[in-house]
Structures are given as C-alpha cells and as structure tokens.
Image (cartoon, rainbow, N blue to C red; front, side):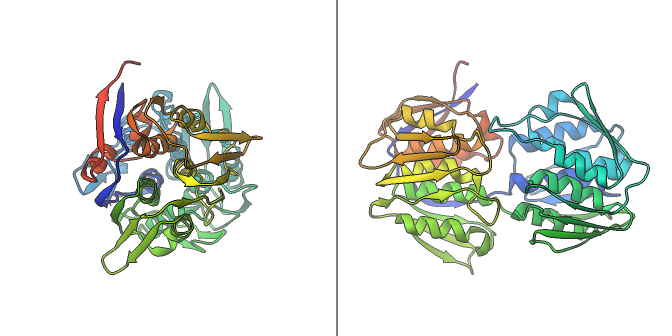
Length: 424
C-alpha cells in the first residue's frame, strides 16, 4: 500500500496545470452509455475512479481506448446491464449508470455504491425520481433493479439538492417521451458540464445552471466528441496549498472566473494575493505576510464546496486567531481532524457540524498519519507541506481516486514529496 513521505516546511513555487474534473468526467462517462455511436471524450483525468469506470465498462462489454488526450468508447457494444459489487463498492459514482442504462436499454441492475465514508448519502431520491418517470424499481440482495417498458416525462422536485441524484434522473429524462421538469436540482458546474455534453449529443435541455431543468425527451443521442471541464477542486487545492505554504504559484486552467470567484474572495480575505490573467488562462497565487482567520460554511454550489472544507481547515491551522468551519453537506466529514491534531493542530469539534481551529503561532510538526477519504488526503498533504520535519501519510490511495499525479506536480513546485511503499 502506497504512502507519501513529505519533508517540510516546503513553500510551493512554480507553475501547475490543472487536469480534467473527476466529478464531471464520471457522470459524462456514464451518460455516454445512452449514445448510439462512438463517443470521444477529451480531458479525462487519469485517476483511479476513471480506471474503475473503465473496468466497469469492460464488465458491461464496452470497449474503451484511451491515450494522453482522448478517451474513446462505443456503447453499442454493451452486452450486460449489471454493475457488480466488486467494482461498484470502490466508488459511489457507479450508481450513475442506473439512469442511463434504464433509459437506453429499459433495465439496469446496480449494486449499492461504495466510496468515501464521509456520511450517509442515500439514493432514495434517485429511485423516487426514476419512479416518477415510469420505472419499476426493487431493492434486494444488495442491488437496485430498475425496469421500464417506457419512460414518460413528468415533474419531480428533489427534497434536497443532490448531485448524483440530479445526474441520474436527468439522464433518464433525456430519453423519456415528452417533457420533464426537474426542480431543486444541483447547480454544480459538473452538472452543468453534464448538461452541455448531453446537448452536444442531441439532448434538449433548458435552464442549465439554474435550480430548474426542463428536458424535452428525444428518441436517441448521436455520436460525437466533447471536452470535459477542468477540475475546480484540484484548482482550489493548489490555490489553498500555495497560500498555506507562503508559496508563489501560477495555476493554469480553462476554468471560467465565475467558478473560482468565491474561493478567490476567501483566499484574499485570508491574506493571499491573487491575480487572474484571463487572456492566458492562469491565476497567480502568492502569500507574503501572515494569514488571517476566515470562517466558512459549506453549501451547495454556488456556496463554499464541501470538497474544499478539509483543505481549508489545513490552511486555517496556519492563520492567526480562531476560525469556525461549518459542514452543512455531510454529517461525518471531520475525520481528518484527528490526523491534523497528530501534526500539532489545535482543533475542537462542536456538535456534529462545526470545527473550531486555533491557528498560528502553533507550529505543525511531522508525524505518521493516515488518510480517511479523498479530500481529507489533500488536507493532510497541505498540512504536511507546512509542518516542520518528516510526515508519512498512509492510505494515499484515497488521493489517487481524484488527483492525477499529485506528487509529480508537487515535486515540480519544489516540494520534497516521495511515493513509497508502506506496510498496511
């Protein structure tokens, strides 16, 4: 099992290029199952979740080819509509094949999903939305089984915003007959990217980027090519890391300014200097003086992303004063607190959704720590870069699920980071 060995403190300096968004690539890959022809996807990141998806497609009979720039698949080769437990348990996003398989082939059998243990993420709203469109769904023996002779457009309001739920029901609605109105949908950029992909393939969707999507069903989706958006969460991770380490980093990406605006605002409040060069598609992040404490509360987009809560906590260990971090998306997303404390961070948990960080002048020191989930891994890496001495981060496989070659990028920024084998 791999681990990271990090020698700190290590200010980051140089340029880093952001890869494609894992959270956009996965729903787009699964939505490709509905296309009647070859699909060419560009900017797909080489992360473990994509490799798991490719293995799942192979189980379904779908050949996939990939090179440095493109991912090519032909869903017409599909031979099975069953997503088995041994693959689905590795990532929660596997549930995203439910809606596309049901819409395209009239049936699907998907094992209950796995992934990061960051709280309860029920799929009942997926089931309710698909049922509203005419699906018959049963849950037994650890599988969700869905069948539909015909999906018909309908109105459905999600009781609470759900990214994967929105993606699943949206995909099914694209091939349902008639008009579907989905309200209180997730507005995340990754959902918008999924909508733009579907439209490119022939779907008819209006209201993209708003809380209400209207879908006029079509009979089929055509073959085509699409470039997946860059990863705003990787962008945010490196921006936070640059600020935390008193770095000087140029981040290159194709993200539009609206997606990163809130994080830029918060980083500036904390004391980072940020300049955006729209013409050259890059952002310069530096920090010369001390950091100030800044409170955050995670919310659905366009609020502060839950996936950057842990990295932000690592940043606040370097800030003067007391900062309050409230988690309003998942109820079990403070598992990184114990590991940050092992590095010397002073963090208290209040209730179930608030962490209070007492920052600088407390100094972090290297220690043996363990990652608990994907974004917690990123937080531990940032903290280790700030800590004095050597830090060994175990179970770094969590990080590999969502970041492509992070140690290589950090090395190019001057950090002392090694990937090593470590006993379980």
